[in-house]
Amino acid sequence: MVGKKWYSSEDSAANILGFIMIAAGLAITLSGIDFAAFSFKTWHNFSELSGQFSDASLSRLARTFVILAVLFTAGAKMKGESALRFFAGFTALFVLAVIVRLISAEYEASRYLEWAFFALFIGLLVSNTVGVPDFLKPAIQTEYYIKTGLVVMGFSVLFSNIVNFGLYGLAIAWGVTPLVIIFMWYFGRKVLKIDNDPFVITIASATSVCGTSAAIATAAASDAKKTDLSLAVSISIIFTVIMMVLEPVIIRWLGLGELIGGALIGGTVDSTGAVTVAGTALGKLGQTTAVLVKSIQNILIGFIAFAVAVFFTARSGGKSHKVSASEIWTRLPKFILGFFAASLIASFIVQPIFGRPLVNSVNKLLDQYKNWAFVLAFTSIGLSTNFRELKEQVSGGKPLTLYVVGQLFNIVLTFAVVYVALSGRFFPLPTIAQ
Image 1 (cartoon, one colour):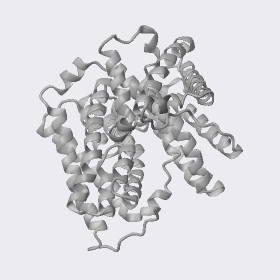
Image 2 (cartoon, rainbow, N blue to C red):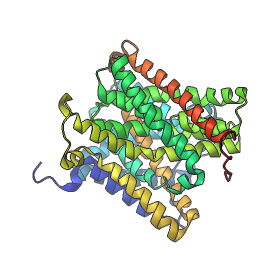
Image 3 (cartoon, rainbow, N blue to C red):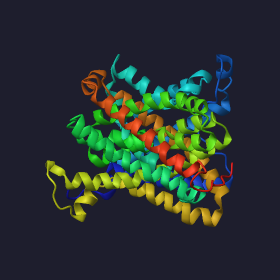
Image 4 (spheres, helix red, strand yellow):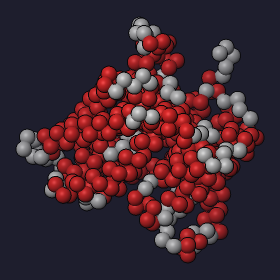
């Protein structure tokens, strides 16, 4: 559109907000000021819960709200939206996010389910019962929150992680992932005859990389509908919970050991948080290995989104045609560039100058605000999803079949690569600092 400001797109706003948060996180960490976001500690009973609502905690909660509200409202204004209407809706959305964080911090709930499940559930509960009030709708912007969070997340994806696990991690995380995506793409289109290409590639990416983050990045690159994204995320969350609980049990029963078991978990469990939990169930080595594999795999988010953007641009209109650089640039999700830039800055500028400990401290601070952005995003997914629409999409069972078959293929292929790389029969075992 002629005359449209460069900063008025959603991706530009996400990049600007993401780098403001990164710069502020770096400055605050260097200054030594305590500017952590509010979060609930794990609680067992209402006595422990009520004890978390001290004046200091409420002050931190208020500060977290003000920071996020100002940032996201400013971004909405950049996009040409009404700041007042967005702020009103955001206030209500933040209250729902607080409820999500509160429930997901309960001891039993936190043992088996991640906050993403409760965010989706509460959003679905509201949208499918009382309905979403009009004043809340301007703030229901799933991609806006998740894109900002992913740019911030880029700062934590250090290329040094590749060095830590060397060719072992590359073989497991990067060797398997593209094959799983290609397999699910052809299985979904040729065998199951699913005619919704954006959905197929979105759920394939969610299965093979890191669940919801990869799904959202790929959905943006393939121009998937919100209902496609909602269904892919819902399926991913459900099976992530199942795998997080069962996979460590099966690994111990088979006697695979922490090294192989942790690598298998890192390569097959969708969510990074669930990978950490499942890896911890195996032991310290299992946790470290699982997180290393998943961290290396997470770097693929940007590359895959870029490849998907190029592929779908070349196939626009259902026909293949020569892709121009301008078409790729138009279709490419610009927040992916922010993700890469944040990773490069952390890896090759901030870390060499200030050292790894400071980068870790910055990420510890940023993770708290990033998680709030993700909670807002997943609550928005639930609020914008209708059970009737999901039921229509699941009709015939093809989406579930695609995920289950794809995940089974992922597990078998990942195990084969992990066994060759880490059994000690073919290559010397790596030394992993715990």
